[in-house]
Image: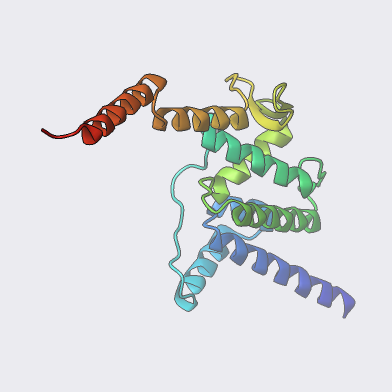
Length: 211
């Protein structure tokens, strides 16, 4: 009876995790790697979810993300990727050792990743990184070959660094861009002087007595 109960709860965990990943528009291969469910069963779950859910189900097609340059292609994405990496660290995913042959560890790892991704989405309301890109980033961080966290010498904050692309700290870049926009909106000293002289001339004309 105890074995039967354990099997039931494990099967329920796989089912719940698969539905959770489907809601995040995960690809079939990603769901399969975390739950151990067959592709046919995952497709049946998708059809069932689409029928009983009011939300529009979007299924990602094609290959999974494979370009690490996506995360550092501009300052905003680089900043978001750094924040997501910090969330991974906080949830213990970067040092979370698990055995792929152990079903319990796979389910725990998948659920923990979903927790981290959902937390990131709550912190970043304008997030551009999808569930699949986040999963790809986590795999690359754990591989430790192409991307890693480094500390900025200026602001002392941590940011994601691509080994093939020596990008600067996104926080410092965004600050410089913000200062540049404020400077472009504010008038130059010469323009301020011209406006002041013009105002004085108008005021003098108004005070000049009429003949």
